[in-house]
Length: 429
Image 1: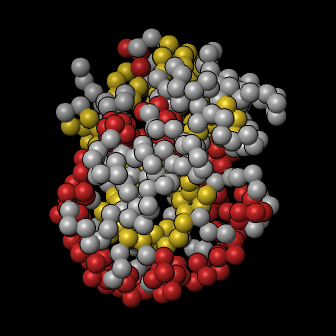
Image 2: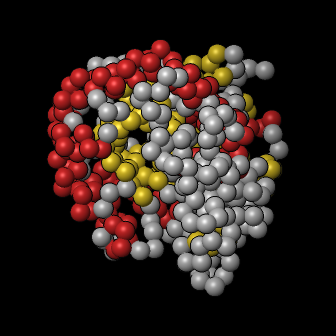
Image 3: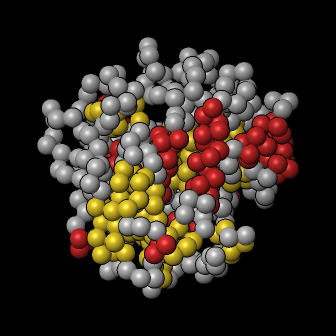
């Protein structure tokens, strides 16, 4: 069987598609810079499918030592030292900017608008010395009490002020949508399935972040949660299944993310273990957990199809389902997430004759990449299978989960999608 490359400069080797660059897949929170087994830990992260790790440090010497080890293991680092960067990180940037293992400077996590002026100054000082490696300041997504948490009434105002005052070349945001049932009674958190809850406003946040990325011309990175994070007695977030991880990362890609984060990959040296009691990819004793293997399998799929999304332009994102009646009604899989737009026949490209998901809801993203139009469909449930019925014109290609490309006509027009799974169809104009 002949396999074809749709993406110009992409290569076909052993039936696999390879892009010129890898999709950035990053692990949040790093190991101690003075740990004696950093090299082993970096190799382990690489084996898990991560291309970069966030790494704290105390001095420029520690930073360079970590970078040297990372270079030997084939992984890159996002250096993190809030106090140094926010004071004046230009000297550190001058000392490390030419290191091949450097990926970025992680300046701050989830600031309020009151921090923006100082962060803007800090970012300008670093980027004046190093314009190649981006400064990263990460946002938290839409929440119920924006005024309380971020000192502004809306998420749109928050990101608007940020992009005006803080000139980071890359945007970054986190919001963790998959929750254990019964712990969050607020309107933000509603049950989506029988086994877990989904935040109702997660896709609304993605809509805003995509619009902001388009408006500013800045690419963005987005997070998935990979640990059983605890905010109060009982675990707020369940141990991540492959369905949970796929749903988050596939949705991020469908909304145009150009880099993917995992929170939390490993043990934060400063954390006493209370917030991350279990469910991390790396357990408290440093041994790999089942989540490590789940993440490794998901990352292999993400990287295999990265060529579809790297540098792609998102034309539109729509959702299948019926309008949600609002408060008091359980938000199950067939209802549209608030803040999203329902798919209409006119939204589909001409080479898609029809598309429906009769037993649930899906994200439907139309992207352009080079001379290709691509349709990515994501099962919106983290734990239920979805039926996708799609009628395609002749000449459409199907991008399988291992990155191989075959004629879609080899398959029936009915796909049974695993939880969080994504199907991709492409047509070369």
